[in-house]
Image 1 (cartoon, rainbow, N blue to C red):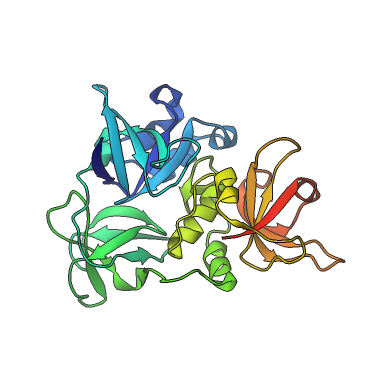
Image 2: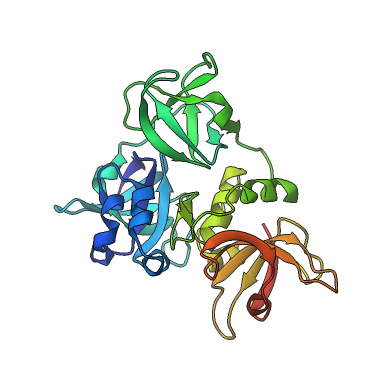
Length: 299
């Protein structure tokens, strides 16, 4: 078990190396192009694949195995998944997308832009595009002309990011309006199974990413998120709480964020990555969702 870190903007974690398809080629490159990967898939491929989750630049991993064909079996401690591995979320990724563990530094800042890029110099050539909301970056010095130098795992010197694209990591639990403000910035993102960025995201990925941006680590999957949060009596929910959905006798399979509770005459509104709409949407709770609402929880 060796510590490492993600060295690309967004890396994809798979259930097994043999679960990839020809349309996954762009995500498997040494420098993956997640936008091209999503565009290459049909809607059916976007919602059914061997993907289990994604990791963001600098995320720590534990490497259990590296195969001669370039596949690495890893665990992501930042995405709790107790039912799969007590250490974190397990899966397979391309070893070329990993680098040495990040050096220790000061307090990190979190990417607050939906997406940004890291450059070689202030306002210079782009070195790493597609840096996603929620990515943690550690400053390497003071800002200069609106640009901040940051340390990046695997890079000898600092790269630069617009200082306005970063924010301090919040110190405490977020308020409901803060949750909705972040989540609403992801409206319109394509539904992609296992996705974890504005380019493509699934229901539990949306919840995980929003709370990550706000300094709270929630599990990655909806059923684990349900187990890790506090139940709220129906009718007592408030904006920023979570709606969980399950079929009779089955575990939780979907999660959405409460926007407005029901008032007795109109259904509550929710924000979620909708398989039906194939997008992140904010809408009144659909009847088919209301029929499977199994719990309301507060992180």
